[in-house]
Length: 259
Length: 269
Image 1 (tube, chains in turn orange, red):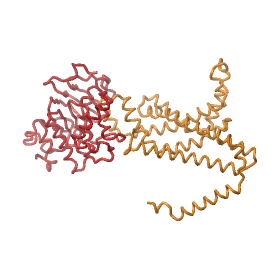
Image 2: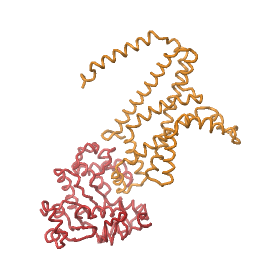
Image 3: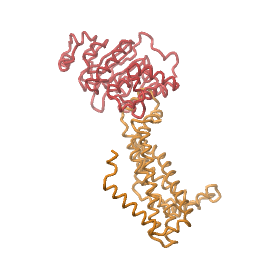
Image 4: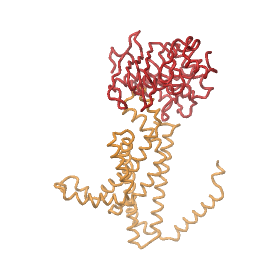
């Protein structure tokens, strides 16, 4: 295995990469990094917060969305299916704008809203960004979870029922863990797609990583350097997601520890 | 949960009692008026060709399938139903769970939970259903795994085990509930031939202990050896039943003679 890991073409690619990075570092202008370091870190923070919170909240919503589509009752199943279809069938950008410009512009007209404790939050843009990204992830993952729940072999659930287990116990101990185990391999890709969906919040004036680099380009008139660094940042984040998912899968697969 | 009146069945009462049971899937009538009862310590072998309804009958006994009509008494308790046709369901879900906890079931496909170790599989029922402590359930699970010869594999995950080992594990899982009767649904049909023996050995052991068992099986030699009664199902009806010596030795029904002829290689001992 060890001698196969670095075949000649790999060595060549590594050499090219080292050369490229050296040239980029030496021959391009990076002085602006000092001025914008804090802004970049702030933007990165918002990107990470949005990614983590909307994925987590979206997954929590996806569990009932997927479950009712398998168990019924019919009206709830239709409702969940309709939601997933709507979310998956319309552009995320449209959803963000509908929430921010649509719903957001209605709030001020609700009586008492300007005086309520919610008001300071409703005039910010991040609650709308959070809501839109959460609903979007829930829509996609609801469909994935439906498949996950439906794919757990019936016999495993029958074995639990034959022991006299309560349906909620079966869900908690057998059905849900097995469904999650089955969808885990797809989660990696879905999280990376979610990461790359976050820049859309820049369109409603939330200052995430993408928005910060947009500002840098406007203010410094530089084209390539900010774009290269931004690409690198998203690439590293995607890599981290992949590593985390691989660890998660190892820890939760059929033949290793589940707790 | 279980008061004194329901914890044990009186000595001579039937553990399982079925009267005029019918089961249809849509227009397909699978069971057509079954009368069957098993008393304490009975080992009943259900035999018959595939499609005869024997697995469906077994699954009706712990209500994994709901009978279309007919009466059912489990551990002395009559089972009430509500609804009609395909909507018919057991009326009392708590009673159902309570009774299922006292009837062990072993499946053709083992159905161990792949996300848990063998030991955790065996501990799951006692902890979640019987509310045993973890330590107690673990001790019990280890003793049972020892008994079925899997103590050394208790930390293994089911998918890493052979079919025979998985099935012995599934038997341990059923035994962990301290069941008053055991239902076996073709427990060796999914096994490679060389693994059948180890599972039958465990089952033979259980029969010798005087456990009440209902076994759907294609293993005629095993049925002849272990069963106190053999029930032959044909096209959804009981065509013949009696002690194994009579059913296998002097089958009267023509359908049974034909069936035994078709499985003759393993007939008798």
